[in-house]
Length: 225
Image (cartoon, rainbow, N blue to C red; front, side):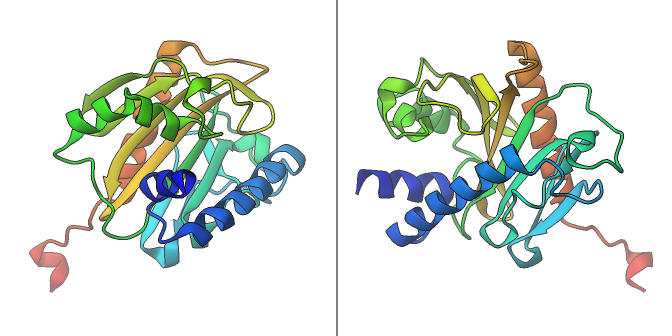
């Protein structure tokens, strides 16, 4: 039950069955990242999720891994374009793995509550939420930063790698997108770990890109005619 509640808070899911489905789905996604680096036939930077209600887009040089992503569940995995396709030679300056998870409708809870949200993440309850195993003992002290984009957190989880080939500190951002609580994670590859400042910078850029690609379209008077 505790795991169910944490899942509801983290992903805006509607019931415990969703938690089990998410766990099974994520396991498949992780296998996809580890075993099918060429799942994307061409470099695709933007992907519509949840029936087109939201979109995922990463920083310059990042493409969506369609094999590891699940548009129906609002989940996307992004990595350097050249890692996903032989047809895309572009690689980002800061090379990491980015995941995006959109919550259910009406779960937005960050805007206007940034300080309280950050303080919660630093508590035992927050550490338990951040732990991939749900065990707060596996999560180090959580460092948070708040700004206009949302809440950023840095921590280390010793539960084991969430994605094969990644390790070390994690950076996670929380923001509201189209009425949905949205989570962005930045992970380091074993082969080339991100420094503390690099991970935070990559997360900041990723959050800005996500906000921009989901910004409301403003129609001017001339365009309306």
